[in-house]
Image 1 (spheres, rainbow, N blue to C red):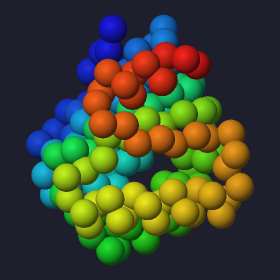
Image 2 (cartoon, rainbow, N blue to C red):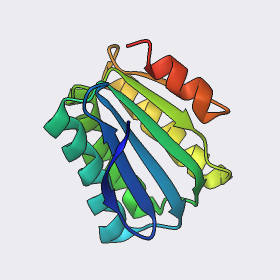
Image 3 (cartoon, one colour):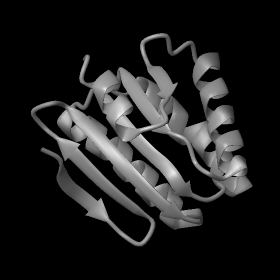
Image 4 (cartoon, rainbow, N blue to C red):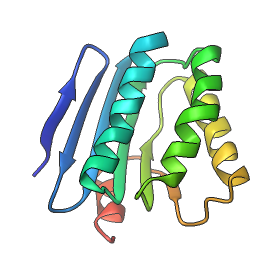
Length: 135
């Protein structure tokens, strides 16, 4: 049972303490301080509840601004790699620019030799959750 952790105009964050799973549902174009705050809240949620799996529902998220992408590569990705997460299930954005930015983040993850953190794309939330439930 997912509990709401945080919600604003652009993102809703949920977690299931028992299953040790988290979920972010992104909407629209989030940028700057709002993007960074929401992303850091994701990491806080993971660390606070020692979550092992994460569902990123990016389907309705628009592009990530270049400055926010650079920040993500320098701050978010290394912290995500160092977190308790073992799996991230991604529901890719309808935005090609967003998908390109996520691909750059995954490349950075691989450069950090993050073998323990598996990331996969899925076409449906049901498939993604089934994979996360294997943990």
